[in-house]
Image (cartoon, rainbow, N blue to C red; front, side):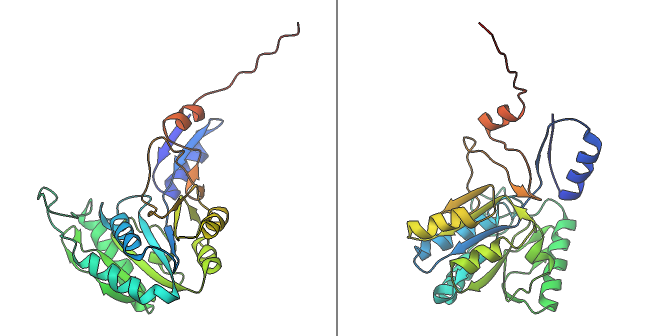
Length: 251
């Protein structure tokens, strides 16, 4: 079996070279969260800020796209930006530091370039978009048009897009409108809405009332579409790596 974690282009090359072997791949995501107006707003904000920025966004299931119902969009935006601005950014060896640098300065420069592309296309920077070396401050964008990189590709950095939506149906449709499907999430107090989201969202996992950045090893972990093949997690990885044998006795 060939197991690989990385980007889509490298994953495609692995499949071309692997031959007749089992393949397990995790190839990233562009994780959406749908926030409905019947949610616990403070909990949704806190979970999504943490899910977006705690690892400087260098997390395959980190929050990237937030689809917030119109009735609470302004309140959510204000609270989300305010909480983001409270994040202490700097050296991770400092005990009270919330977020450190990206893995290289080149990655931080890529963040700058992707945001500049979005701004040139009409997006608004609500906070962040500041860089010092490899450190790129947590950045929140609104008014992001479709088709720019921060909207449809995997950012893998501390950038989040906020979009207003009319209802759950629009949130599901727009969540699915990318080539990735690793984790998705929904915040709601309605079990009916939760199960509609679970059924409609195209993702390997759907998290209800927590951010996409929720995972434990007991879960099957993997995605659909360009997010990969197969499932990780202790039990499920063992199953992927096992070749079943069928034995029949005629007695």
